[in-house]
Length: 227
Length: 227
Image 1: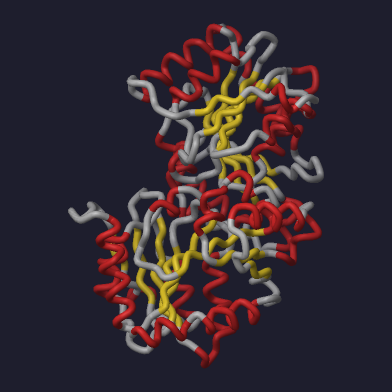
Image 2 (image 1 turned 90 degrees about the vertical axis):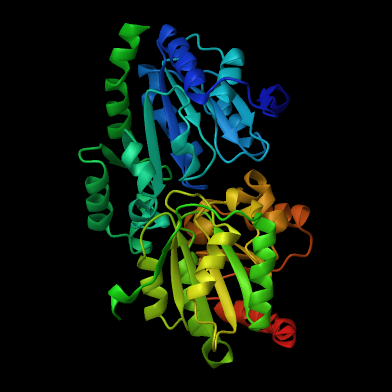
């Protein structure tokens, strides 16, 4: 694909509306278009872009996926997801900001083609803390964790596990190499957010992706009816 | 060890001095005590506490290491480093704050015994963005990256690589499992911060730790002369 064609929104200053108001506007716009929207949050390097690529592949004809990529700098992830079959994708460069805000997504939605898009994944800046405080207009918050980050992440970063609607544990192909204790991981999440769905995947090997996308497709119906 | 003895500083509100002023006060105090101080920054789960434990082990009799642990919540890391031979350790719980600030360290220094401590490592909250903006009074900023986070971290989070005085690449025992491209990693760091020392280690296997602590011991002399 032609890298010159990547569209980048550079965020220099915020608009003068509250974040929650801007998030409400975004959500209305996305529901009018019938697009289920996911705020994808994780540490740097947990595999957010890899999960998007594997999700596109596993969804196949069942749903089309658009992407907003949030990064401090660079556009390599947008190039990757466009090459990987995203229906459309826009890069937001936050210029140093450690999280996306609703007004940034608002501007990206001006440029993003939602036609033929069933699911929009907004890939937040890699950070387990700050993104939890900023609604973007999403229907679901997804917390992604890599097994190589350790089983103690819910204990040390409880808020993101409390507010998430679904949790994906990636890199389970590495689980035997990194002393990951599933019981501690699951028990501490259960204490913070009882009953939250947790999917185990390996974006490297493809393991577990279909269970995740089967669940995702089940979430589409309500938004499609509103749209 | 007795877990009840872990001392925790809970940060509720900031003091009314600027961060840079508080950092200068901390630095003067640490230099008066002859303590080389390191601000250890990384993503969540990169292995900061493991690096501290391996550094204590590798330093042996050459230098004693004190620790300030910064976490959103919990004190498990302070318990670990005290059990692992730290000369002293204090836990800061930031109560949701995504980074340490100088006034938090100032309060921790009131309680930390610097006697017989040659090196103080301040383990920041896991975050590749926000901690770079807050001086703590350190002599060196250390950026730790896990190989499992991917070789593209310097491209996506350039600022932390620009401002760091030393970079440690951990989890090199996983490097063959995670498609890590050393050339991209080293070239992108070189472009951001020419000549910065980079050490490759595995805190799991112990590989590479001695080269890192040999360098660390070389950094002690100037601070000892000032102290």
